[in-house]
Image (cartoon, rainbow, N blue to C red; front, top):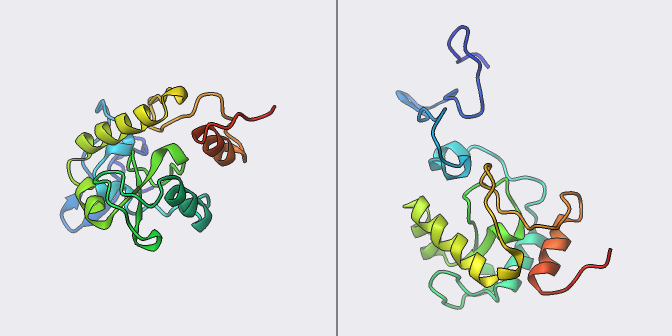
Length: 166
């Protein structure tokens, strides 16, 4: 990664890429905020992970009954958007995803810290038995679920109040 100054290590939070001529990523090393709350252009270049499937999006839309979770307006299933609460599209945990209409999705991309607190609090109230927490990385974690291939089924069954058999 050739844009680091000589003798300095390039970290994921170091500015390493020019977005537009003369505009660089903000200097982020040492700042006390979660990486998932960085400006949009930092994460907009990442591709969605393999977990981001039509099946996952359909499950989230059905879970939320195709209702915008911000303005509570009913939407057609194919007209709803899926929003990442922590703004990190690599985090496809069902507890990090919710259904929003197009207008609300546009508005949630401004004032990210405010929307993050509001939506995170809403999910915490909605699923109090899960005791959502925000670790240093900023990801929403479901305590007691395994982080292997079964994470999706475990999270969805927990949200629906179904106990898993071990």
